[in-house]
Amino acid sequence: MIAPDQLADLYQQACEIELQAFKPGNVSVYSEGHDMTVADFRISAQVSAAPLCNPDYSLGEKIFYAVKATREAVACNTNLGIILLCAPMIQAVSHGYSESSLRLDLSRVLAATTIEDADWVFKAIRLASPGGLGSSDQQDVNAAASVTLMEAMKIASSKDRIALQYIADYKDVFDFGVLRYNACFDLWRSHSWAAVAVYTGLLSQFPDSHVERKYGERYSEQIVSSMVMLDAELLNASHPDLIKPSLYRIDQAFKCQGINPGTTADMTVATVLAVFLEKLYR
Figure 1: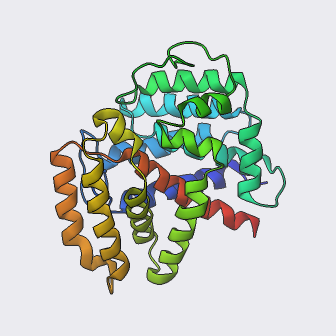
Figure 2: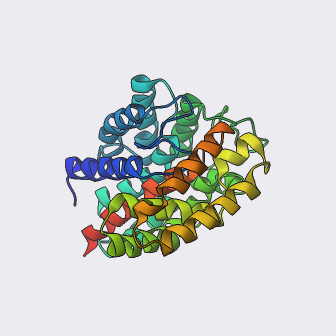
C-alpha cells in the first residue's frame, strides 16, 4: 500500500505537468486567464493533496475537504473537476483492493459509493460553486442526496463528462488518454507535451462540459475544428515546439471569447495521474 505522502506527491506532480502544458483556452505557464493564475492552481494542488490522500477519509470526505481547503486558500473554483476525477483513483490505490490493476480497483471503488459519499460531494459542489451549475429536477446538489454517488453521477452523465467517467469506468482516461500520453511521451520524452497531446486529442473528439454549460453548443464546431487541425499539426511536427505559434493564436482566440475547456484540462490531470498510478502495479 502506497504511503499518503508519496501519493500526495504524485498528485501534485500530475497537477504541475498539466500547468506546464500549453492548453489553448486554459490556464498554463504560457498563458493565464479567466481571472485565474498559475499560482492559484499551484496553491490549490498543494492544499488539496493532504485531504485527498488522507487514508482515514471516505471518498466523499476526501472530495469535500479537498474542495474546502482549496476554497479557503484561493477563494475560487480552480480544481473541483480535478478533485472529482482524482479522488476515486487515489482511494483505489490507497486502499490496495486487489493489486491487479488500477482500473479494476477503481471500478470497485466506484461501485461501492454510498449515499453519504453523494451528500459530501453535493456539499463540495455547492462550496465550489462551479460556473453554469444551475439546478436539476433529479438529485439537485442544493438538496440532500437520496441516492449513491454512482447513481447521482449516472443522472448527471448526459450533461457532464466528469460524471460520465464514473459510470464508464473512466473510459476516456484509460482507453484514450493514457494510451495517447504514453505514446507521445515515448516519442518526445516530455511530460508536458504528452499532456498537450492528451488535451488536443480529447477536445478534438468530445465536447467540453464546462464550455457547454456556459454557452450551449455556440462554440462547439469552432472548438472541434481548431483542435482537429492543432492535433494533426502536433502529431505531424518534427518537434512539438514548432507548433507554439498555432497554440498562441488559438489560445488568444479562445480567451477573447471566454472559452475555457476546463473539463478537458481536468481530464488531462486525471490522465497523468493514472499514468503514474499504473506504474505502482508493475
